[in-house]
Amino acid sequence: MIMDKLENLKNVWQNQPVTDLNYTKEDIHSMVKKKSTSIVKWILIISIIEFLLPYVLILFTDLETPSRIYAEYGLDNLTRNYTIVHIVIILGFIYVFYKNYRNISVDSSVKSLLSDILKTRKTVKYYIYYNLLMMGILGLHFFYIIMNSETFISKLPDNANITVLWVSAILLWTLFIVLVWCFYRLIYGFFLKKLKRNYAELRKRE
Image (tube, rainbow, N blue to C red; front, side):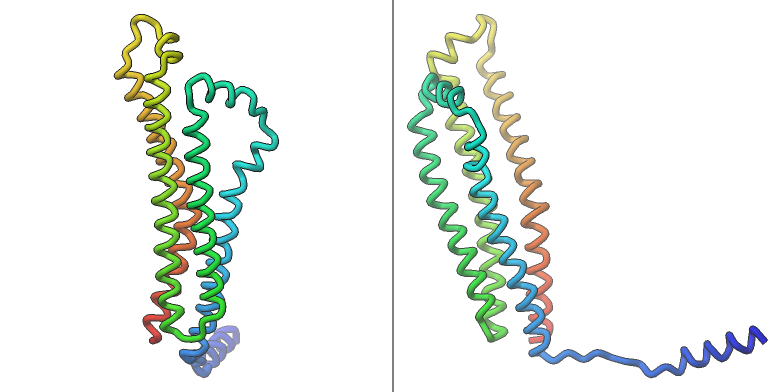
């Protein structure tokens, strides 16, 4: 009796009509557009948070000690100049992210959407490269000024090896940059992969 019931269920399952969801190009375009808009919006939000976070933290930080150290080693002007340049460039990237978001959210053609996805991916990569490069240049410049300052040299013990100090500083700073790169790979890489899949889906349906 049980075997007969199982056999009947098996026959019912095998004879079920096959349903195949067929999406039109317009459906695919609409879905990819919606997903891409959401992704680029999050890229924009994260870049803004990343930009503002250090300045928010400064509000809760005692700046007297860092300011004194900068003045002691002659880093005041250097820090100010780098900060100004960095703010201008990052605001430029944020503006481009916003433009990409606006373009993707309003463009109606598949060709335009494909182009905007590629532009967004390139912009994010340039943004990451810029930040890593800026960290590298800033670190080397800081180390050079500090280690050649009279204040630093006067505090060194007689048996100090300046070469070892240089190598140690560069290795530590390189490690820090690698950690930042891993962070970018984790956060922005996640969104870049999603955009890449969206691009591939559109190309396949084009």
